Length: 214
Image 1 (cartoon, rainbow, N blue to C red):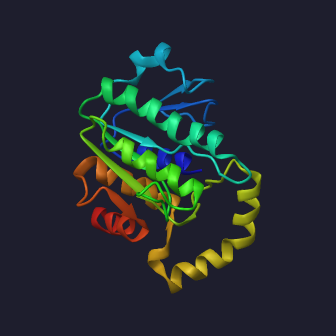
Image 2 (cartoon, rainbow, N blue to C red):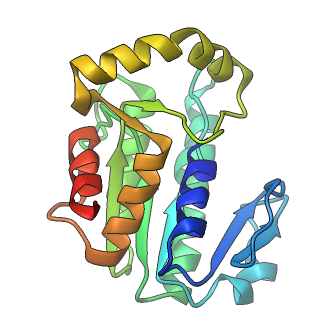
């Protein structure tokens, strides 16, 4: 869902010259600036390494829900996959800014009681040790999909359909608690262009970046 939203903002940005998506399936979208790499096994990137450079930024939006998932498998699909991709990109693109979509309540200590928060925290910490130009860790809470963006996960689609009106109300009552998929994409572009004052960015920080851009 977030990847789709970010992609739309990248394609619309006048100063973005080229966009490459990497995923297990193709995106149903065509654009002169867009190149798609379909890679069934994202743990094996050797064959596509020549196509992964040179780039100014990576917006890493892959992720899975920890619902009904054991820690070992969640760690494999969250920590191992992310660090595997990031390590390759850091080697190929020393001037790259890497933006990782984490989540609100992520545990930077790596020792809390919440499994998913510990794994996300370990992922964040390890990313910051790689040789990127900069690493930014986005920790959004509630996200409102816009511009036709929707989740691939059926459970999330149902939740968004049921809670859509409430998200609009919550956005008016607590404007810094919810950000749109468009806002996430714009904030990513803003940190790639001009950076940010800190590495960990919560929803309020992301919305401030969008306001700065506008």
